[in-house]
Image 1 (cartoon, rainbow, N blue to C red):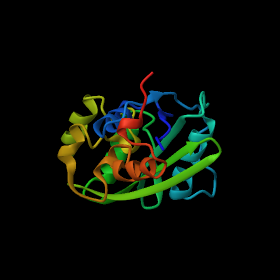
Image 2: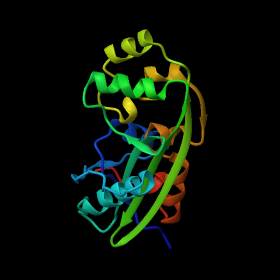
Image 3: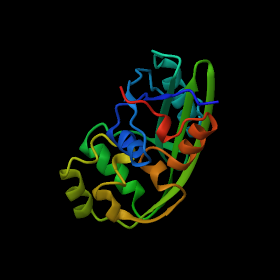
Length: 198
């Protein structure tokens, strides 16, 4: 019996997540979700990132029965504290100073939705930074790369030169754990050849 063709919808406008999906053969439709991303007062980082991915998936509208919604959220965590996107360059500099010569965690949660069904995964990776001096941080901030990044850095960009070690999933640190996503899609019978471009 032939499989029903499925259309993959990415509930995000992140170009990094789209590029990662394309890297493994998917051409998703882009349909961002708009949700309140304020952490709850007593929420742990892991609970927060899982809730964000789930709420994004649930908030994304489904236009056809064949659609599979993929949502994700990524946070940088240091000493149990979520380091979000910087408020300004001074805030970004302070974050990078805290990350310097230390290891931190990057958590990415993924939620896959088909109709009323939901599959979820969370991947935790450890990232270690070299010791950064003020000149390195200043030069990086001038690039503008830190401005819209959780934790004030993007491992796939110029900040790669700060990273001495990654334990876990590199693609998850970028924004999407590709192995786990591929397994979830395969579990629902969605593979590259099944994806329909519109």
